[in-house]
Length: 115
Length: 188
Image 1: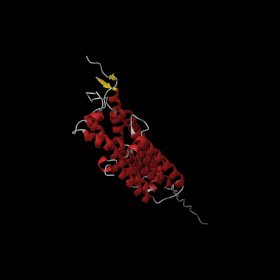
Image 2: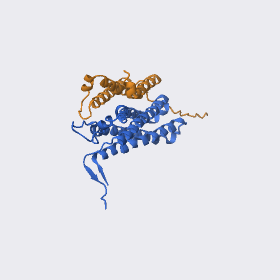
Image 3: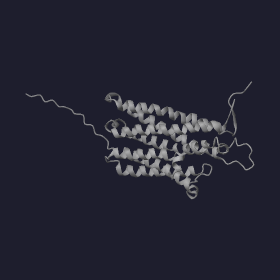
């Protein structure tokens, strides 16, 4: 008579990282858009007027509204495409944090004015 | 003891939502670092995973409230253009700052940077909150997501710090004041 021992192994099913990657990259895109629109509005009176969505706040209202919409649109598209996939997150992190770091620098007026 | 409605809103924006966000940031960084820098203990991780998601979501709400009150309630008072024959610029902080070479850079660098860099905060922390909720306990399998979570929170602290510093300095040099007076305590 032999005694069988059933070894129960814990199987850990990890979620694909696509959703997280979509959130990370889209945040980089949104941040970049805030900086890009701020510079564009500063350089061009025409663009500045286009961004005046709410007069008391001036161009800041349009710059930020369009950047937020762009961020959400990028997030929705990337989420739709990547949610079931595993992607190269290291590269996406580098790109997203480069965008975020540049956005902090480019919104600093002495640097933004160089363009 | 009185306070004006504009001062009250500035207080809610800066000392309420903004300062609370900065305080919460340091707590979040410590929590994320402690949670993932050591080997996780499986038995008690479930509740802590959920807690981090809720904590970052509250931070995201604070960040959105800060930028929205700043941009749409206080900023219009700050940048209002004074009528041509105005003698005292006290009610027009932007014009007051620009009227002196010693204070003009507070607007040209301080406010110009603050008004844009502050918007990076809700973007970064909303993404961090989403990752914390979506992955919760599964974050232990994703080191790159954990780095991103920590990076977003740290960057949002840096950006919020810039905005907070210039907000305080601008209010010191040219406070947003005016509107109706609210009596807090009746004097004797």
